[in-house]
Amino acid sequence: MSEVATQLRTVFVDALDLDGEVDVENLKYREIEAWDSVGHMALVAAIEDEFDVEFDTDQVIDMSSFKVAVDMVTELKAKND
Image (cartoon, rainbow, N blue to C red; front, top):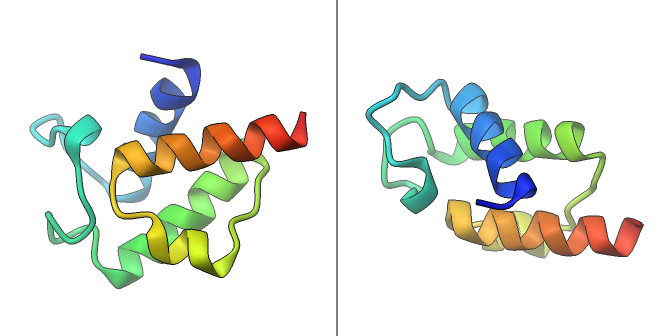
């Protein structure tokens, strides 16, 4: 697992208040009760804070899974470096 994925996994667990039984790496939006629209916005804010990035509206809407989030953060960090 990449460094971004490892860090992002922790953000998902904390922001969505997940327990050890959730398979974070394969998690998809609305697949669990915690990742509803309100949880989504909390997650986006937590990711932006943790990685010092800013998502545009399309990216917020398109963040449909953990894997997509990893790709987005990786791309944004590469642009910012």
